[in-house]
Length: 375
Ligand SMILES: *Cc1c(COP(=O)(O)O)cnc(C)c1O
Image (cartoon, rainbow, N blue to C red; front, side):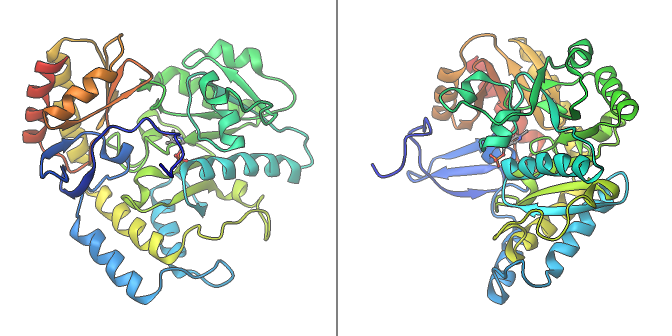
């Protein structure tokens, strides 16, 4: 064994994928309702994505950020066109890096204004990543355990509890960082009123509103960004997971006035937004934008089907759904594999469904048929 034991891996080797199907080395076929954890938004073997990778890799895979990068400009434009206002994008390679960039940008923004604010309010059960900043932002004991002392500057409030936010507010508070749906936290959806109050508070107190859309973004909930359902105007949005359709790329989008706080040398990345990564993101952004109605439609169909199973609470939006069984769902994941279904258990008791966005109702019917036997 040469690889560190950081993952509890299931004993299956996938060797190939096609559409929403995965195939193991014995040739068994599985419907994939995990999609590489909300990553493979276009499913497997998407011809446009493959073509983009082939064509770009023949020309230029990587060029350093010391030189002009028209691929970043183009993907940046595509993202900002979907943002609620003018903005600028910083490219990195993952969700945790996007959130690190966000944390740094928040601090720099206030520093530039000569203010000493730096603290960010985040929420229990959130997940923002595994590096020190994002891990410290993540208010989950099991993520912190053994790594203390954490980075200073985070205060933890209770999700969907506005009073708990008010109680934490102080002179050093700089921003509020929130997921629209807590993915790793068990597919818990924010309340409309709660997010509106947070937005109002940010406005009144001059705080920055940071929305972590690493999991909820890229069409996952039926709108390009999940914040759109809640009439938010965030200052900063972070993306990764689905952005490259399986190729690693992350991004931070900031409202123009906020983005200005980063100057030459403030932040950087060797790989961030390289030509190959951007070629992937360009295809994915364009294709996902045509799938939004499909996501709403199939998502509603799937949700109804899960509710009809009548086995637990169903939560989520679009194709980000959870079935809370209120008991350990690990064993169910294993049995599902035997029946040709790839599912995921998060927060201990919640079956999480984040399939490729190209999933069709026939796949959902089959999945529901299997789930009905399983849970
Ligand atoms: C997965 C996830 C991250 C971390 O992304 P990585 O690419 O694993 O670093 C951050 N925030 C949210 C909401 C996520 O779901």
